[in-house]
Length: 79
Image 1 (tube, helix red, strand yellow):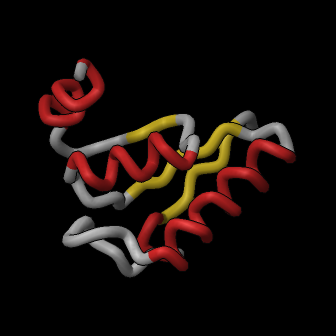
Image 2 (cartoon, rainbow, N blue to C red):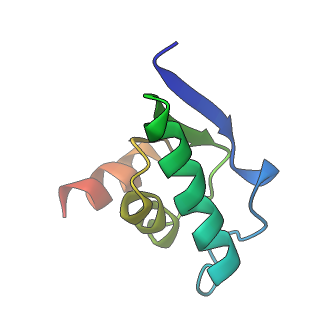
């Protein structure tokens, strides 16, 4: 299996309101680093559909970002 796909809410309580807590941002970074160290790509499902969340995922190096609102994600990614 070339990637890891897991439930965002299993690890994070942040739902995209306000800033991501520093502890959760650090956890996200560690999860991404561990997946990449093992040679996997990473995606989360059940992520909140907000640009602020997508930005955190991008900044942390998450490889695949999914969304229920595909048009909003498309607009975000085109910027």
